[in-house]
Image: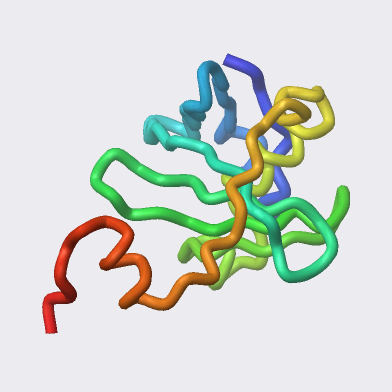
Length: 126
């Protein structure tokens, strides 16, 4: 796994290592004893920067925007409460290392729910 410099300002931040492994579109993040795995998909953001959807195996996901080396946004609780998170730390390190340069951009889906249901041949649940 590749170690990542943390943006945490916690007193014990130096003792908690954040590291990641990225292969075949899957990101595994280890922070302390916690290990999470995500499927990574890049999508077109509505503003400057690169946007990624990190989807966990249980279906939960975080949308992350990396605007530049310092600025970014994430939907996770860590970012909402602290203004930084392991997801952005890892994405920035991966971008700096060129690991996401060949990521596939998922185009925005501008279809209405009715159009999506018709295309999928599934009726709307309401």
